[in-house]
Length: 179
View (cartoon, rainbow, N blue to C red):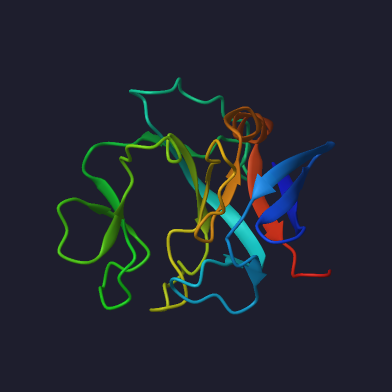
């Protein structure tokens, strides 16, 4: 089990300190926040446990997964399918949960045309239980080629994301600004 610390820099840039590595990361366009709200484009401060990993088996090879659970097992690893989504509608009882598509509530498709969700770590934020409007779909995913800010997620390059998963990443502490 490996724990990492995300240290925000300026704007949407950050550093992920993981074991003996410091990896460049991209975060939400609004930086980090102690008071996350749906749609604020900020990455939430606090301890974010890695719940499971999803990947596009049609595009990338299965990632190597290190021991990330207390009993020494890798996290759950699932391929993403065409009908996978994530509910981001605060009025839905499925808010901040993985869903099957089609779905009547507002949602995000996990099967994307771009490559950002080719490899995704689902981070434990506002999920036990979800509080409507406190933020949803906080993921550890791939960076865009131009390092565009996320909508509140944490993004790494594919080699770096594969590395931390193989090391057994179990959680990330997102530090508040200026900490």
